[in-house]
Image (cartoon, rainbow, N blue to C red; front, side, top):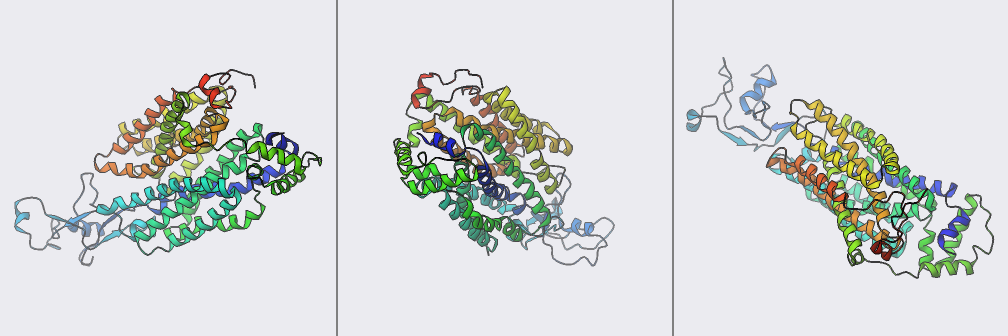
Length: 537
């Protein structure tokens, strides 16, 4: 008897599994609250140089700024420069100091903001940009903070992946909750930028625990036929987190309090850990038969399944445990030893890098859109729900490969069309951004299903682990790519769209897996024997 047969005995989908899915909903909500937090946390409001003097001699602020600030080519006041000497307005002599010799020969001289900046507080009372003046020459530090966070996620995925296999999923889930709570509150109390950057990087590494632990903890208690439905249901909690972030950002305008608000749900997670079951499959691989028996009996009781003493006896479970320990743990090197697996791995790495790069590039850069940041975030979250529904229908009819390639192509096209749309038609740019977000979410949702079906059973967790690791690298580079606007304003969109287009072409190099028998071994993939044979389901 194998573990799948054992799971059929106690119930592969019932009250026990539904309760487990509900318990795993909290970390799925916490993830977007933190991953997309820079939208509000690192927002840069309108700003200009802090100016000496007062407004006593001017009836309007516009006139006051006119004497002190140069204008950009688009007509707005400069955010990073001021006149070396206040200028004279037409028909008045107020506010004018003696000009320098150079000014008499041409344009008035300008100097950087030496006394700090004044910020528009109408939309945000405080962000890390206003807290530590991360604008103008220091604006790169704002993006660096987001990149360091995702680098932390990448490193944490490696650490938690190893530790969860060594010490168990449940115990490491508690570690992730506690460490995220402590580091999140510490980040909110940061006294300088360096402290904030370090604590946010460490927070990213602990949040990676949720991405590594939650999915196996769900799937290892589910039978095969319900795993696809549970996966799609679980992904809707991410969308719920996106919508909840829009509400939290609207109600809480101070970055410290907002960071505390998205961190405190970890307290609920810590309290709920007593009801989270350990993976019985993992316990059996470790030879901890008595603990596995206790959880399996509890599962059967909640699911209302009468279980005979023979099927869950110590002797029967010992046989299952021995069978689960037969296969050695594969390594990342196994993904590159044979030609077909190597081909799949390289293509999936490109695909996952692009999916993350374009998704976070679009989600974290809301500049040039007609709506305010709260409306945009709410709309971005709302469009994910129909996107998931469309994916569910398309993967069953058009296939995984065509759905994945179509979603990536749609993402690339929306970026490309936005390059051609005039900056004056911001409503079109906003509509294209929302459509692009729907396509990028569709690509994200399809990638999980497609990748899991491409790899054989013996390499499936390892393959998904590697590709998602490369994906997190794409997510960490997405904020930095936004800085390319300093070279050319349209270069970030060109980078996001170009990578998505490259991944579209790469996806067509992968085999279709719809209505195909899943491969069990590496030999099944290499020989292409019975792997993609059409069957009726």
